[in-house]
Length: 46
Image 1 (spheres, helix red, strand yellow):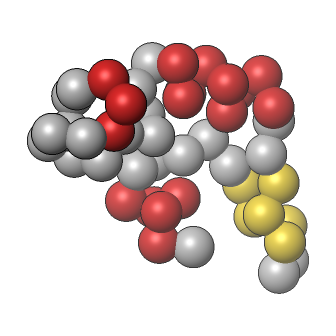
Image 2 (image 1 turned 30 degrees about the vertical axis):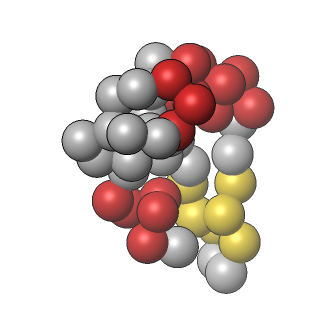
């Protein structure tokens, strides 16, 4: 899961599985953490 590492997504790994706290992921998305680097426009297009 390169996206977890490159975008610093809030998650932790338990054995082979990745675990996510939904409230942390929601806050991460709302803060712009899910946006592609260099893309700050709304809608995800430049």
